[in-house]
Length: 72
Image (cartoon, rainbow, N blue to C red; front, side, top):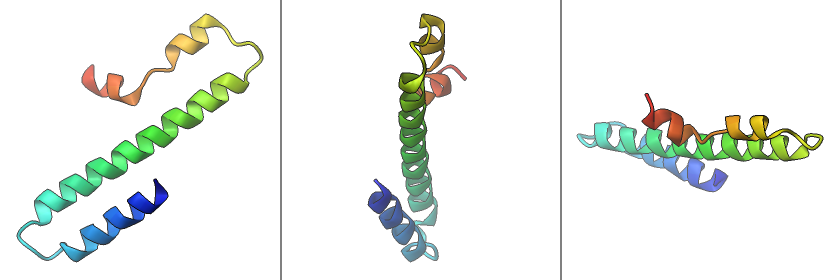
């Protein structure tokens, strides 16, 4: 995933000065946001699993960032 992020940044730099800048910029920003969201969700899931037993309430509060985005 880190390699994909670096490739996306390279694509952005290549197309920075063309007519397609808007589309490429949007695509790269979305790809980076999705990667960072996935990474954050993964880290939060790991932290939740490492807790001492945890409670059902704690587990239910960890929602996907995609769900939060849809509810905006």
